[in-house]
Image (cartoon, rainbow, N blue to C red; front, side, top):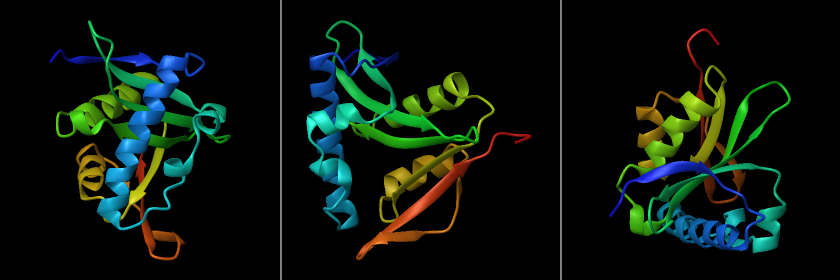
Length: 160
């Protein structure tokens, strides 16, 4: 399988938006099972609702066949921090470094020197390991819904 390259994603393109939606639902279904909570908002989000989000999108896209292996979406906060909204990898691409590739690109090329925030289910061990490995510091856990504990992480570049 060819190695994916990072590209900006245009969700006005129907094929791109459909692939992002499909991968997001599949990835969040795996997380929902892992954390024991099926109320993850993106799981019930329609394609139109996903496209309406005011987010920036990049994807790991394979050269040749154009297969989307995973994606990352974020928004810039008024104070300059970056808030990661979604980090999703197609289950077919799990454990191949796709999330790490996306995050490293984002931290070094898209928003170097900016603080970055992200949350994940507190029982999502692979995501927690990844964020910790990349230098994110874990903040306090919180519970936005009954039976759901989320872990908050912050990446603070040197000097920020």
